[in-house]
Image 1: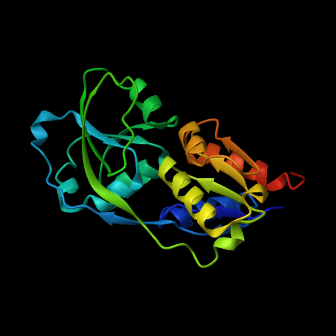
Image 2 (image 1 turned 90 degrees about the horizontal axis):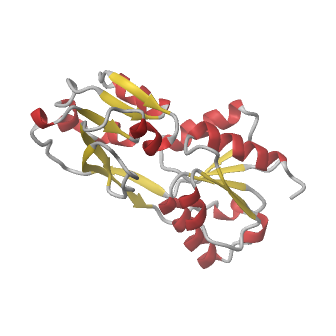
Length: 225
């Protein structure tokens, strides 16, 4: 069985590793980014019907300004984000399982939603709601990991297009044997961003952690590739 290399920032990397171990996989942590809060000021909250939460990082990094929003119902992408929001005292009204686009299609149109988000944000597709995005954190690049060569003959999971592009750049610059590495990407956009010349690149059926790890497990066990 191939090892599974996890590239996402902490504390998400350790959470993914724990979930991978429960599937019988052998994770190697190799974060390529560090989460850093961004100073921000909450807008006039009387203008909003709720919060759109697409990342547990936003919940953890939002700080005092985000706590001003505790009275707003929260709509979260994924159970991990919902759990982080509940721990901070938010009332989670909706939990989506098909990415931000799937979540928004399940909500009433014409809602006005405040979206505390990362600095690298993808605009939702065809949203019927008014979404005001405010960056509350950034993913700062870390130096190339000391154990980067452990990627060879592994399966790497990429959780975002930016992580995929960063992996591709580091692999090219270090002369990594990309033909020995399989990529499990959380979305078609992340799969496209990682580029070519890998052994194989596949995207998860749904843009969530459960589907991503199911794909990764299949690739890890397919040692004949």
